[in-house]
Image 1 (cartoon, rainbow, N blue to C red):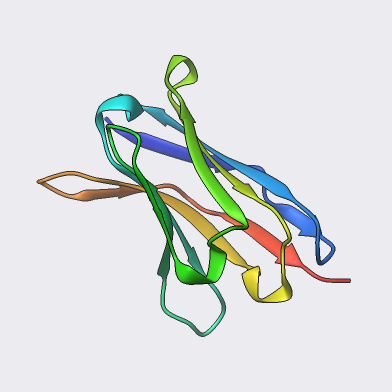
Image 2: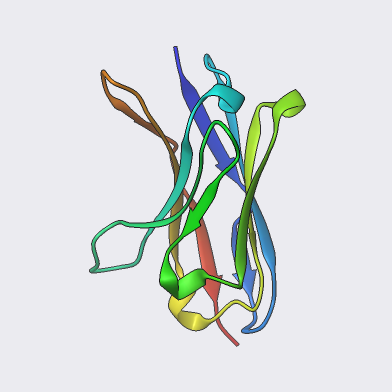
Length: 115
């Protein structure tokens, strides 16, 4: 059974950094496209970043140049490094594993950017 567990969220001041982790079990992250999404209060869930099985990455325009996505195959974990955080980055962040049969989601981790 596939499980995704996010961690690393918290409260940070504007301009600060956080690194989110998504540890997977029941699947191998290196052979899958993995994505980070976020949902702010009252808004739709949106794509933040994805990393393909061959390591290519894509980012939402709003985070380009500030966020990076990577994975550690030995730890079966995908990371989202977030720098220069802004108040508008405040949201619950989720990792997602899409498969032909269904999408798997983690439980989410809260990121709050505030002074």
